[in-house]
Amino acid sequence: QVQLVESGGGLVQPGGSLRLSCAASESIFNFAMGWYRQAPGKQRELVATISIGGRTNYADSVKGRFTISRDNVKNTVYLQMNNLNPEDTAVYYCQARYYDMDYWGKGTLVTASS
Image (cartoon, rainbow, N blue to C red):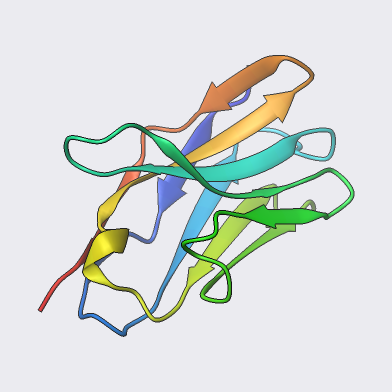
């Protein structure tokens, strides 16, 4: 099964930017990919998804600030996050979906705080 490893998280001041990466252990060509996040005491929520064909979908709370992209040659998915605010603080998880099967990474922590 595909293994996913997230990276790029860290501490950033409000208004700052980060780029998350999700490296897959095999080709993602046939996978829909996504980023989810879970803040302390809250349920995991969708952040953004990108289909096999490149169509994107975003949560309302991140539209205009975050951009999801995929590189099928490098087997990597990215999440560019701009204008971060404290409400974006969470563990961010990468997801790969193949038909009805979901695969998850272990997450990377993003903290937006002064």
